[in-house]
Length: 168
Image 1: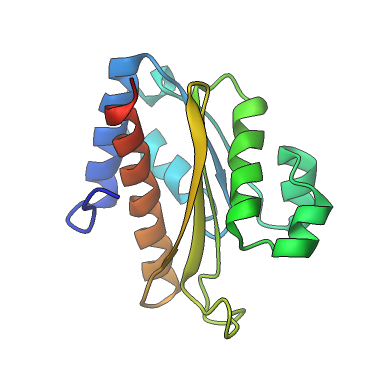
Image 2: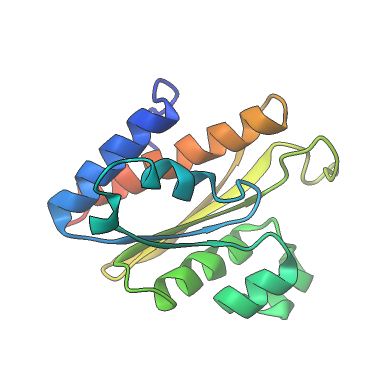
């Protein structure tokens, strides 16, 4: 993953918009623990309607299933916070939009909800595109709830930028 710690949310949103516009792509997002933070960041950029299609805030398991097609079996077997769930969320966002690229975020922002296996700060990501394979990763962020959500938002946008800039 490209170095992203020096990006602010607004800088990442501007760079993401530029990368999407350069390719003529539209973005769809599926967000859980960030609650639409990526969608808010990108829509704060003037002209984003040219490159942002839609966002899904699927905080509950039912919303992940109903809106994005995440299977109950996946959630039961791997958990809502898993790369498998993130992959199905990103694929569902892509399928249920006119976007060419989609991202998803699902995690534990805290302060409660963590476990030994998945402590607070554990966030799973996925990226999917019409001409890109679905890729996933899990990252552990530190700080309070807001800091974790902000870090996850920047990480997602940096991942989208990297994929857009390296796509053939």
